[in-house]
Length: 135
Image 1 (cartoon, rainbow, N blue to C red):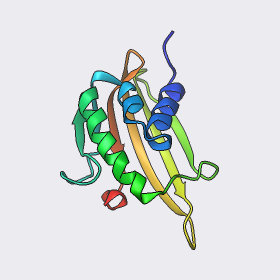
Image 2 (cartoon, one colour):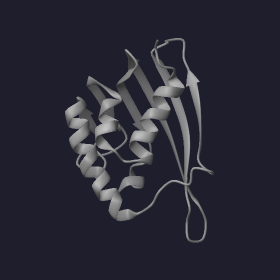
Image 3 (cartoon, rainbow, N blue to C red):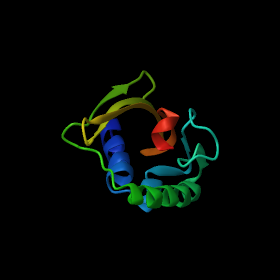
Image 4 (tube, rainbow, N blue to C red):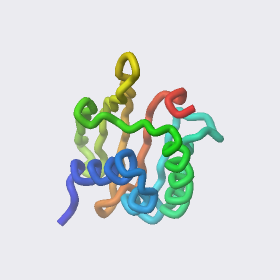
């Protein structure tokens, strides 16, 4: 039984953004999977391009360790997303508005992610968001 885009997306978000578990996140990808953030400059806090489960695991563990010092977590009651399927059954798009509680007002981070799936795992994820959000 193949997994739905909803299941794949929710597993990815839970493993990454919610629990910051680099091992679990890496397992959402195919062994040769690619995680890209094309709008980011190379050498930033968030990796621009990671190839393969092991590179994803290592780099995201370092990134999550840096995030732990920040202490910010998304407000799940205010955060929302919409998934869009495409004519290609192996591609779907997520539109996400992640909301963080702010001191004076909430901070909303809007992003788009394009997923290419193979055998129920992420073969390619392109994550489009503003570079200043991870500096």
